[in-house]
Length: 563
Image 1 (cartoon, one colour):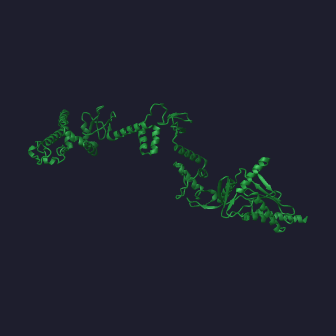
Image 2 (image 1 turned 120 degrees about the vertical axis):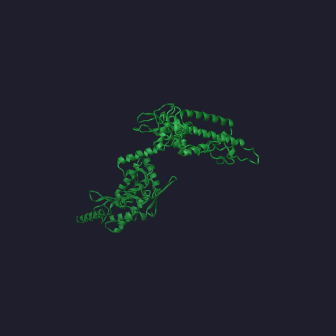
Image 3 (image 1 turned 90 degrees about the horizontal axis):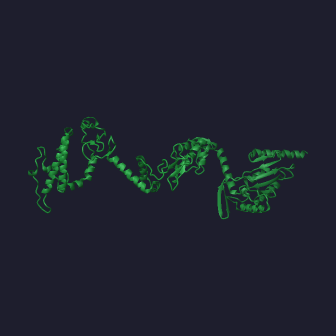
């Protein structure tokens, strides 16, 4: 009839108007006489969802709530005679709350007096829903959970599906995982991502404006960067191996980023490098994990606490977990000087916990033995030189820089370590970089030497027998140097003999302790050494320094004369 045709046109216009306003929320049936409507719930300034179940309390603040589902079907005489046929369902409202909403929809239909009512229903479910349910800032879903678990118990006893519970036009829909809180949190996160992708943001690195769809937001701190800048930042961290703790790119932010932030910006190949480095850095912090020493393998190996045997599951290589060489059983590990230096520097510079770890790794006694060997090698490197021919370590305390090895009798220069001509070794000191440096010595070494042996030398001069024996040795050396034609050494030994004789005479002429008048030695008591011999008063030691050795540089011949 003409009236039904008019009703049909009104229904089509109403559905077309709703579809233009709520394009994503309205799903119309192919017949055009019904469909599904998901009215979005407006949440002002966030809402707190809480529950208290079996002593467990939880609360979370959300900005978005899942929409209700309004399944409607229009009668042929709508809107003049009958209201739309509908079913209202929701997962976060109780069956009682849904029934109250259905009653309010019926009231709106009566108030409309035969006019279209779908738009009023949608507006009510969207804007006035929380106010109608007296929900201002907090929604307690504990009654919903109690109601659901009671329904579960009843339906299990009667073997009934519990996915929905109806009360006429109100249907309580339950999530499949039985966790309402999880569904609400996931929906809020999805809505936040949708809004973010549609918004514009300024990258804090390149200061350019981008759509949120090509930007990355870090939830913990809220900073936003474009994905291209984030990709470059992550690749730089991977390049330098600093993947253990990657912070927010903002200079003033110390928020640590999670692996899913990295995966969202990197290519699969780059992300696999990141995962590999992250696993490697994590394994390095574990004291019971080592790596296969083969460079082409480097597979992580779990160490046996009761043995030094390491077995690689990748290449089947058996190695020692201490020296990382082939497994040698109970035989001690072979360390060279480079290994000792590295181990000892690590031990001496390490923290107490690191030192304990080294002691557990190498053994306390073995580590002490290694420390002694390391100190010996360090002392030899500092205080000796190696023979250029047989490489034996030689220490030089005094004498000229022409040195003869006591092992292979090689003659070499102490300064440049060159092998010298055994027939004329002094020719080397007449030209080149060692010219006139035959008697050149390390001043610092001489000061340390005389300081260390100062007391022993004084005690030596106080013993007449030792002094006489030393004089005989010097005379024998003079005879040996005379046979070799080494005149400078003879003159030096002669001066030492004269000084020691003079010191012995001074010691004998000293008065006994307690005598008030001490005679002054005059020139008549001085031996006649030569015309250029200085007076005794010039070289006479002061009071309290009688036993100090006297250095007489005035009578030393020049280096050129000696050579």
